[in-house]
Image 1 (cartoon, rainbow, N blue to C red):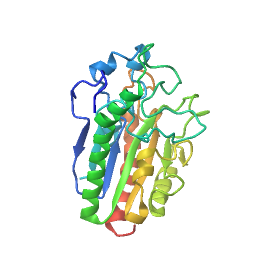
Image 2: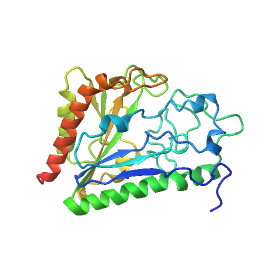
Image 3: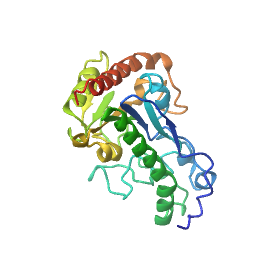
Image 4: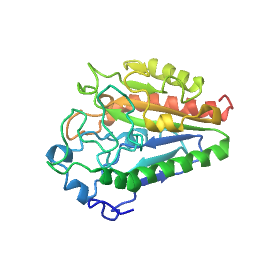
Length: 277
């Protein structure tokens, strides 16, 4: 394959892996902020803000579950979105969304300089350089963990601003649980998420609302094969000082949220270890 002009040799590895022996795997496709220089040069001022990052989600989940595996993309979603279908199919037909390589941000505003929008060749090159290695690593870790326990639970970690009129009306609930209508995981996993998040005092919760689970959840979630997947989309108002730049992490605000997330992850792990799935 001939690389497109914006694909210089990789400046950093596209994926970071922390291996553990828990049956729970944390997927982190959108916390990366690395943009290779050649790609950054094509972004306009709006794009360079990287506003659609899942800010500090890796920090929020850090240390919540002993010995959990994590697979984290280091590249930004403006390079290529690791939670989109590599074939480019929309996850939400008929609704506003962003694609495999976004042309706009979540507000529907152009992120590329005039004449610098990614070409089909660019999209394919970025898929091969970033998307494919991330998912190869994720698939390998799912297989490794399943070999240990006979079951694996992929918990896909996400966050988004709570107000984005281009994508949804009104204010997004705090906890947005996605299982694609219950298809991607055992019913006990979905039940645990609803009970923990729905019972979290001071927080709002929805199951399979605006976010039903991205490509990752839908691709890997195969309960009949003992691989379960669930997506958690958190409103960024739950753990950021502000949902605008500089998107600072608020440890005090995040503390009670971390307690609920720890309860949920521990409960999911226990379901697997007790042979309930």
